[in-house]
Structures are given as C-alpha cells and as structure tokens.
Image 1 (tube, rainbow, N blue to C red):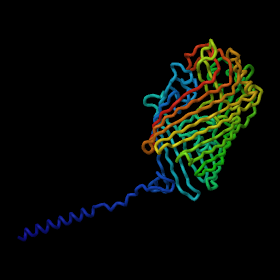
Image 2: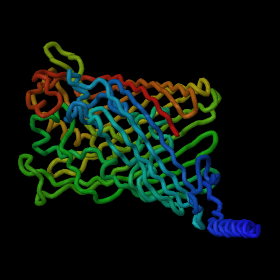
Image 3: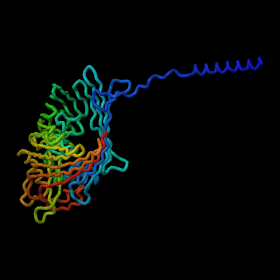
Image 4: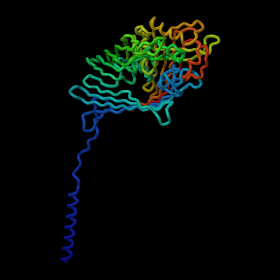
Length: 512
C-alpha cells in the first residue's frame, strides 16, 4: 500500500514539475498591433504611415480608349508625318494622308498610379506627389508598352520643386468640358507637367499669386525657321508636312511665368503671363549652306504670352454645371497658344478644287520666329480663345459642348522669308499666292454616363477646321513624298484648300 502511495505522489510531483516548466516557457504577451489610422487633416483617402506623422493617399485609374480618325489623345488626323504605320505620337504615323495605309482608329489601355504624401511642420505642410502612367497603345508589341511620369514634385514653405502643372495654365486647362483631351487649341495645355521652381503666395479668401521659372526645352518651343537654309527651299517633304529644319539653338534661359488667381465658390478667375527666350542657331552660309560659327547669328529676342480665364460655377441651370472661358495672346511664344502634344505643323489632304488637279492640301506651320541670313528674328504673333459648358442632366448623366478658335499671323518680313523658300520647292499653278498665316477652329460635344461611383462611360465627337491662307495650286513631284508615309501619293497638281476633320473618342474609366 505504501508502495502504491509513493508511486502516486511521485507521479504527481513529476506532472507538477512538467507543468511548471511549460508555464515558464510561455512567451511574453505581445504588444498591441499598431493598425493604420485614418488621417482626416487633408481630406478623404489619407492614412497615417505606421510609426510616422506623415499621411499618405494612393489613387489612380484604369482607362480604355477607342479613338476614331484620331490618335490616342483624340488628336485629329491632321499630320501626314514621317513615322511608321501604327505610330501614335502626334506628328508621326499615318494620319493625314487619307491613303489606304492610314489608320482610321487607334486604341489604348492605361493604368495611372499616383501617390500623395503630406506632413505637418513648423514651416507648413511638406508635400510630395508622384503620378505615372503604364499604357499599351496601337502600334506597340503584344507585351510592350510605355511608362510615363506626368508629375513628380515636392512642395515646402510655399515652394514647388519638380514636374508640376505650369503656373501659366488655368486650373481647368484643356479639360474644361471634361473631355479629357489635349487637343482643344487656343490656349495653354500642360496636362503632363513641366519641370519648374515656383513660389506661391496665399493671401486668404481664395486669393493667391505665383511666380516661377520653367524648363522650356521641349514643351514651350515651337519651330524656329531659318528661311535661307537650302534644306528649307529644296524639293522635299516640307511642301506637304510644313515641318521645316528647326533652327533653335541651345537652351540658354528658362521661361519666367506668373499668375494671380481668385478662387471662390461661385467662380474662379486667373490672369497669367510668361516670357520666353528665342535663341537662334547660326546664319546659313552662301547659297543656304550649313550654318557655322563664323557666319554669326541673330540677336536673341524675348517672346511673351498673356492669358485671362474665368470659370463660373453653381450655375442656375443645375448643380455641378459650369461655364469655362479663357483667351490667350502670344508674341514669339506660340506654344502657349498651341501647346501640349500637338506638334508644330498640321496638314491634311482632301478633294481637288480645280479641274485636272489630283487632290487638295492644307499645310500649316507653327513657328516662334523666322529669320534669314543677316536679318533679325521676326517674331510670330497669335491669339485664341476657348469655351466650354458642362450640364448635368441627372447625377449620373452629363453633356458638355466646347469650342475654340486660334489665329496665327506672320509679319511682313517673316512671310517673305517663308514664301521665298516655298517658291523654290516646286511649280506653282492656278494663280498661286503664298500666305503662311492660318487659323484653326474646333467645336465638339461629349456625353458621359456614371452608373456607379467612379465608373464612367463617355463618348465624344469633335470637328476641326484647318483654315489656311495660300491660294492656287502646287505641282508636287516625287521628291515631295520621298521618305514619308504618303508613299502612295503620285506626283501631280495639288490645290491649296481648307480641310475639315471629324474625330471621336469612346472611353471607359474606373477611378479609385
């Protein structure tokens, strides 16, 4: 009996000791998990980055476009171009020729991602913003695509450093009618940002002012035409594309830009200004030979642009309705008037006007200035306006109408230089007269349906008219078409005539 009792007591002791050891091996209680917290300081969608006082917001969209008689920005088919079939950049690809190798539609699928961070400091909010697009378009390989950076900037103590919207542009820019295109001309369009350093003053009650310096190397330069260059007078593609040899020199000065803005519940108004350095390359040598340093160069000129815009909100026609208007004048700074991704030349073939002619043609050339050997820079002037009205039929349906008019004028000396070059290109017929001045006017409409929040289906149609000022005809020869996508065009007589272009866009966009 005593043996049994000893066995039971011994077993109990072993079990107790084992339990004690297991209890000693248990981990210390974990600290509470630090869950992501909502940051309400800067609006909906912001969260605190765990362990920091910085708030972050992620956003973007997925978008699918089908474009009819246009490129992937609903850019009208107004460029003959020199690129391969299927290319979609403005000014290249097979668009304006009207041949059987022309693309009558293009498609694009795009994913945009953006990231916005903000941190409160004793100097105010420190903000960083990044936005990029991943896209696949007509003409790219099955698995290929493009990666672009629209915006990437830091804002601190009133300063903006990096790629951001130009201070010259109105807050609604080219998107006043919600048509999301970059081809409503007559004013500045900088939808993908420009490198800059800018400072913004906030005066309260919605009043602000901004001054900045911006990198003009690509976005704000049109052509600069050295009309005495032999290449511009020779028989070649200039006769049908309007693309002259660009005689801009290096980038020696940024553009200086500023605005004053009033933003109220009922309206937004802005007055903008910019100055732009026009810096030419060397003069051409005797007989239009290549420019070299000993030839000298014309003295730099300064171009400028001014713009005024007004957007009326809370209209009596319905909640969310708005009317947007802006007007721009430019002198030697033409990309402030016809900007964005439009390129510097516009051309389109059409039906003949005179008996015996093969077809008609409009050729429009945009240049900041023109010069010839020994002359000064002759700046180009122009003006334009845009208007757009958006009406909301219901919370799910809206329709917009929009239009623009742009006029480009070359002064007497500039016109003489261009016309002297054109006179040598090929034979002129049917009472030909040369006048490089032109206008472009546009009108369009867009209707959008948003069945659920942040999902929109839209359809847009736009008519563009290329209003050129040449008269008569030109006898184009084989050399005018060599090396271009209009390889099917025959030598013959082509009449100068205004050209109209219908274009359209169908879009699905899901924003998040």
